[in-house]
Length: 143
Image 1 (cartoon, one colour):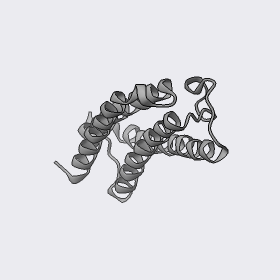
Image 2 (image 1 turned 45 degrees about the vertical axis):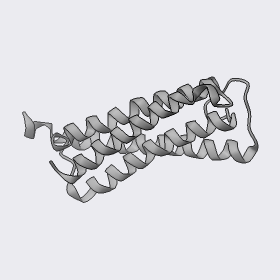
Image 3 (image 1 turned 90 degrees about the vertical axis):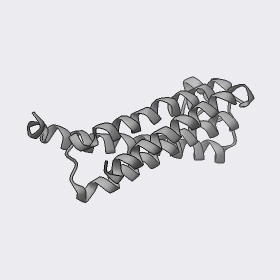
Image 4 (image 1 turned 180 degrees about the vertical axis):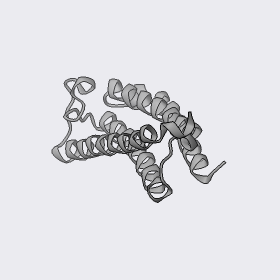
């Protein structure tokens, strides 16, 4: 088992556990519906990291970029959960208007949440596209 798979697996398990803890606090958040979104995001993203750990050796990502992609993926996953959790705590709603409902927060808090949620989502999406590119271009090696 490589260090990359261990890092991904442990990061996924920890994020899943954080998601369970967030679920416990849902009724305490200023916006409980946003708290549910944070809980579900962590409980889904954690297993996704673990899934990447299980299949990493089959994705054919070159070593030259693997470390960067892994840390960007892990970091963006945690920052996304942090951003949505802060939205639940502050009542910020601009970045996630459906879960935000009629809640609002100060401009600074709204900007912070928007930066975390949108920025981490873009990074996570780009990382997954790059990993998928390597996986699909090298799929013949594993057949």
